[in-house]
Image (cartoon, rainbow, N blue to C red; front, side, top):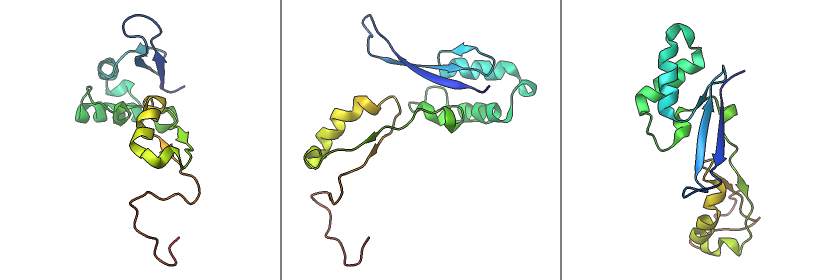
Length: 134
């Protein structure tokens, strides 16, 4: 089994609602931060790391353990959270900024999302479509 990443929401206390990320090594160790992951991988030594762990350690060494976008230094893409997909109505998109603010808590855990506008929708300030444009 490989590495996996989980995200849990704190349920109680002054920090209720905050998301925590936990990294589980291939041998089951629960690591609470990228600093812990870096220490773990470093302590394994080159002979104890597989190719993916070597890449991960090089990434952590290059970008640091305090990078805001944790996916820069995470296990293979199969362990990343799914990016949510939103299907707003034309009315939702009348104020795109307000819509994005409203949905941000729903995709913050993934760091990215996809917004599929309704068929035929175009931004208010978009230039007119050229003839023959797809």
